[in-house]
Length: 249
Image 1 (cartoon, rainbow, N blue to C red):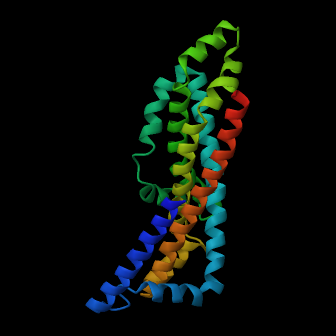
Image 2 (image 1 turned 90 degrees about the horizontal axis):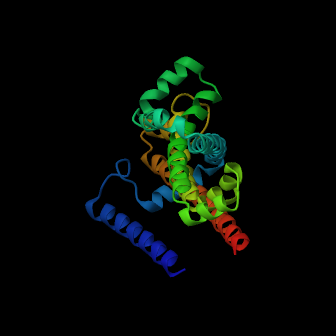
Image 3 (image 1 turned 90 degrees about the vertical axis):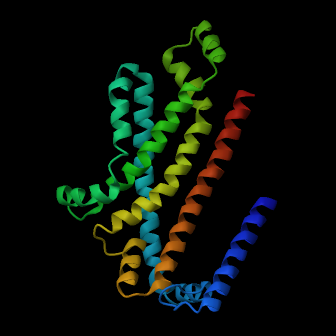
């Protein structure tokens, strides 16, 4: 609890310094607006802005579910079928070496301006951390327990679902937390491809009209949305890991 309060006090201190430096240096508001001006702009434009927030949140959620599901399935497949891991693992790594912002225009050419290219963008950014974290979690299963299950005559399927999967949950949730924050970023990038609403659209319109205060409103909203998704995963992790420990205990 003390750590949370210290983080809030640090944020409050940063905002005060920001406002003081802006007043002291007399930086124009269009170049660097004060925190109060950004907050006022957010309140003033909230009746229009919340629609963009809801659009980005729903897009992030759908893309997150798609990307994490694909990542978990890929990790399970590569773990259960070792013969596939050697040839496919390098391609999983290479998939992250292509910048999404470069790949995005190609997705529009191939799939149009609909929902599909946006989901693909978010899936790509969520897929990798979940796959790698799950694979590492599967590998870190206690070898003594694996030997014990083998001696008890457990099948490979029983070994996986009763031992390897439960023990890999902390690692999997680490990947999910990264993917949760990436999903919002991926959603904003995908909205730049062409969309009627979303924080990415709002940010583009604000930037083109030199409304820097609204650009910061969009930036802070992206940060808050990412934190919200992150803490939801943290809460799920606490419940599921605690439940798993209770069952094993």
